[in-house]
Image 1 (cartoon, rainbow, N blue to C red):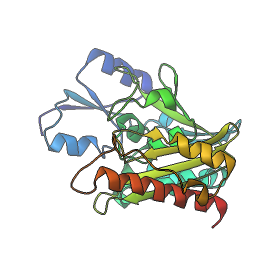
Image 2 (image 1 turned 60 degrees about the horizontal axis):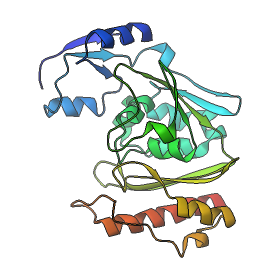
Image 3 (image 1 turned 60 degrees about the vertical axis):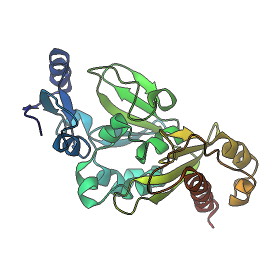
Image 4 (image 1 turned 30 degrees about the horizontal axis):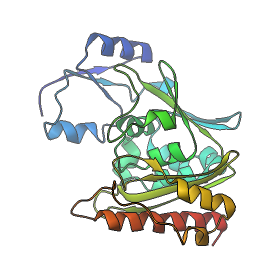
Length: 266
């Protein structure tokens, strides 16, 4: 680990000003990705700016048909929240599948979204629900926010403040987890919204994406059988020692069927 200075921010304004003045500084909330990266000497920030304790980044509320979750809210809080479980149980279920108890009690939704790991769970929920990422500067639709592997629309010094999820008619999530890390080798979020059916896939490709052929099929018939004749193009999917592209393509279809079965009550 390279040497760095630690700064505990007392407000979002202070954190933003510090980032503007120190371009090599990094934000720290839960640190579940950042700390291992530092240990492996893959990053060399001049400062770590701790924003995990800021009250303005915490909280869960249901307002005007949206579930709003502060960026520093930990995964465990999302998983056990009575507000989330009532308004959007699929999101509570998803949060409960993330990593292990240590990760869920330290990792934050804002950190996960800002990092945009291609195998993270939350991006599937954001894209599947057409959520909005609210930052210190603007509001960014999920479809514009995620821009490929570990890449987002965030500008230097821009901080995620909260995520706003439109409450769907119903939704479900299913994933095939990596046996060691718990990351998704393929995870599929299916949502029936006021504007139609959305199917978002994480873990299988270099970034989260929508499976539009499945959306069209499920719009006509919300049942696992509607996916029978579909195939996932494996050409652009990930391949590694754990799974071939073709295997991941099959996993996407299997996880999509499981998610739809949950919606159908099967």
